[in-house]
Length: 291
Ligand SMILES: C[S@@+](CC[C@H](N)C(=O)[O-])C[C@H]1O[C@@H](n2cnc3c(N)ncnc32)[C@H](O)[C@@H]1O
Image 1 (cartoon, helix red, strand yellow):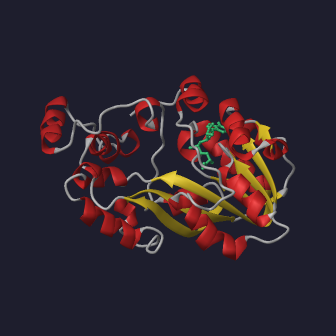
Image 2: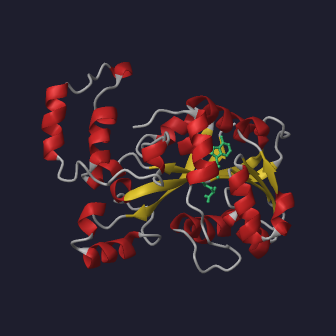
């Protein structure tokens, strides 16, 4: 597990984050979580006059889709210049006026009740604890009374399903080792023993592109997230899992067609099924303000 370091996170998104070639104006290459938004959430909540904020809009893929397909009023906020440049390259100059360079502190400049929908897709896992809290406080303030926050989280329990080095992280850093509850850390000898039990304990190989190998990535517990978000004055109306893995990743190579069939049966069609709590690496929450 990598601890949060502001500079490392910034540099990762400026330089190392893989450059996507997708351009959302054509709907050909939508990611799983985009399909959840487009097929399951937007049809219920999107109105012609919805004012939308896409926080950490990245390469503006969803922003561009909403702009082109739905013609809604949308503003993107993005910290990384590299990402904004890529957004303009992918979607043309017309996108330029729709994105402001800024981070969580930019939210403080926005007036109360300015947006009806806020997207926070693929961002909460990269924030420091302080910014995580600050983002929720501001989202609550700048949303209109009936506004909706759509946020994604990385699923903590997926690590349990993978039988690899991330599973060991789950045991050593999450299951055990919680000072607040008095749960002890795993002693070195037992650590060695547990490591031997993990069939793919050395895999996957570390690389420069995987966020978790390079920067802090917050993992969230889908069983407690509803209560956790109440502390930030948000009620969870819906929770959808996405990015299902039909088998633990290292096993997929041996049984690819079984894994594919499982994925096909669960992804999108069964996005609210309990299996997602283990087999999907992320989830989307649809949230409304408690007050
Ligand atoms: C995984 S990408 C997600 C981009 C986009 N929302 C999407 O779903 O395709 C994460 C984005 O968050 C941005 N980011 C990271 N830390 C940020 C911060 N503190 N404030 C604003 N944006 C940040 C990164 O530059 C990157 O563009």
